[in-house]
Image 1 (cartoon, rainbow, N blue to C red):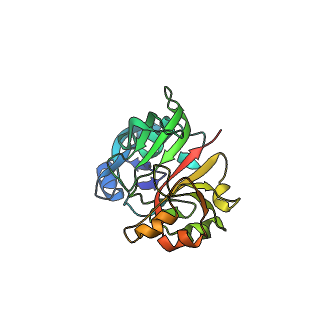
Image 2: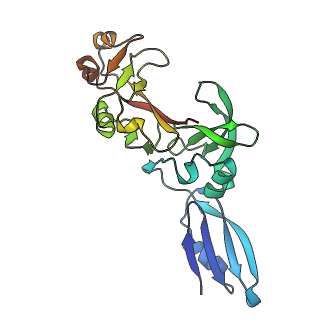
Image 3: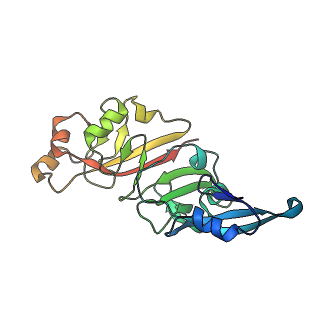
Length: 239
């Protein structure tokens, strides 16, 4: 008799006898590997053996990032490897909250839709997360915010208008104040960062009205007229 149990990124197989190969094939879906997992086989006299197997990669559908579970403030690279598999985690220099780069752990580096870059305060032990960053093609969302979301979408998630930096330059379109809205009150030390981008439809004249080192409310008619969308988002862990 055999049964397949699936945890967070780690399928665990409980087996008896010689059914191992058939159960592994039946429990796993075809496709690229997400990482590795353990097959545990129970034999006579309660003996136990363990075999490492590949875990099928998830599809790049919508995924919700929360500051809990594998992304909790207490997480470490060891935790990420345990949750997602050793093959899914690589080390690389990633962006830190202050804009510099430092040692980080990257989930699914080759998949722009599912990639997550984690920066660490402890770059030697790869512990104490400081930032989780997503790509411009990310399928992840945070508190209802996703790539391509409209100004109205984000206002709705926040529960009120917010303040953003004027467009142009590296910080153009960045939200600077959630105005005590829901997006400024994520659980624990997590803080959501969002940068809006202008589409090709935005007129030059319209852009000139909202460019430069000025702060605008998202409800400003000149901002709304340009119909900006979320171009980037990230989560900073503040201690």
